[in-house]
Structure formats: C-alpha cells, structure tokens
Image (cartoon, rainbow, N blue to C red; front, top):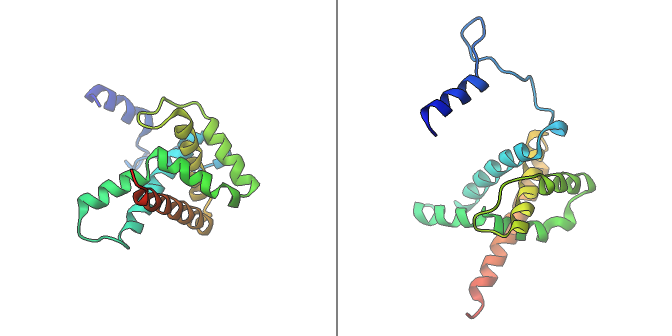
Amino acid sequence: MKFLDRQKRVAMMFEEDERGRIRQRYDGVDVKTLNPLVAAYVGDAYFHLFVRGRLLSYEQSKVQALNQCSAQIVSAVWQAQAYRAIKSVLNAEEQSVFRRGRNAPSHAPRVASVQEYHISTGFEALLGTLYLTGKFDRLQDVAEAAFQAIVRQMMTDRQRPK
C-alpha cells in the first residue's frame, strides 16, 4: 500500500480521544446489520487459525508442509466442497446467513470458479457470524465438520489412480 493511501486509511479509521487513547467508533457489533463480506472477513481469519491449530495434531515440525496444507484447505475450492458436505446439518438461520454471504457482491476469484468463490464466501460469512455472535460451541462444530469433510475428500483424491 502506498504511503498516502495508508495515511488516508489511518485518518479514516482512527482518532484520539481527550486522553490520547485511540477512540473506538462502535461499542459493539450489530451482526444483523453488518455487511456479509465483513462477516466473511472475520470467518476467513477464524478458519485459517482453526485449520492451523488442527494441523498440529498431524505435523509439528515441518512449517512449510503445514503452510502448504493449510493454504490448500482454506482455499475457496475446498471450502465450497466442505459447505456442500455439511449444509444438511445447518439450521434455517445458518442457511440464511450463508445465503447472504454467498449473494453479496464481491470481486472475481483468482483460482476458483465464480460459483466456488461465492459458496466459500457464504461459508466464511457463516463462520464469522457465529464468531461475532459468541456461538463458539456451534462455531467449533461447524469448523470441525468442514475440516473433516475436506481432509476426507483430500484422502479420497489421493487414493484415486490418475
């Protein structure tokens, strides 16, 4: 980011209060009115951290292998497959959150198809909403089910003859 762009962003987001502390603009997050892409932003970060933590159950010394595997698992392609595998266990409210995220206007994908990208955005919006509403047990369950679905499919793909 260019220096002037960064200066503008800092001026837009942060200001000091009368005591010299950085003033918060909001007292909380109203998740129902939040842009679904913002929820997806949080969900993406959560799923990255979740996957990295889960991978430590399988590998603890090869950082490059951990990084490559986590990058693949959190890709739009695999998240879309995970969503398809777990959608039957989502309740009506969670399906609604997913749809809002999936249908939010966003930029074109780099590696995934447009459909996979939108599905993964909906999945991330669901995770972000669960996180921001404090539904941590449900968040854990959904993330674990997605992780298991992805790894199972990766193992199946590995065993197929080419």
